[in-house]
Length: 330
Figure 1: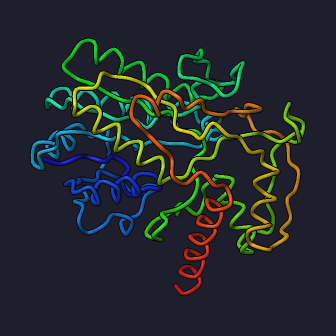
Figure 2 (figure 1 turned 180 degrees about the vertical axis):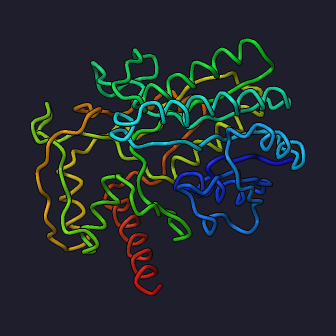
């Protein structure tokens, strides 16, 4: 029996594949390679190139490769882009997820893990924010993920089907063994962009807004190491396999850092004083977003191992340096 990882050639998905393979799982990756990379899929995993919205392909893949669980990462993730292209996000994140869930149910898949987001909370009244806080997304991205959570909830009521939705805060860092990292050249993640600026691959970094209601005026976020995040997914899979009930969990450290603090830490870690320019606010950005993580610790037994902003930044920078050397050599 195998685990199907959709989007397994992407940033978080590729780390999930590594985690599963190390645990002795058989892994199937389904990815259309629109933002993922063939080289990011280890040879030990089976790669199927295609779209999660192709129900015939998904169905044949599940049956042919004996898939018994699905971990669903595939989707679009850039908040400002979702504001300018809402229909594209609802199609890619919601409609296609609906198609995937339908096939999963028809093929008898009982365990499903969904890559959700803290963006479902919008601008929470209190921080850290817990899972029972009102859902009030302020971007199509957040809404598209919330709608998929609702579909999973209703599907679990109607069918022999259980799920865990993991609400990510700001994912960062790279595989501690140097095997994978954030590799998209157009990624908008702050730590990746700061790494590019420190390496001279960008002329500068832009800080979007310095008048937020935070101590230094820049947005505050909870940065979680990608390796800690995928370990939460493996625990969620184990939980469902043991008969755990459908549930939703935050994935974050219950600790926030401002954009300015991240930039300063990048400069300290790398010893490079790159330019950081003020820029207008971006649509869909709340002032502060920090995870309350009591529930995932108590229910899944999750214990983060890499909660160190300096180490997260150092690993992300090392991976970006690796990518830059590869680009210059090719």
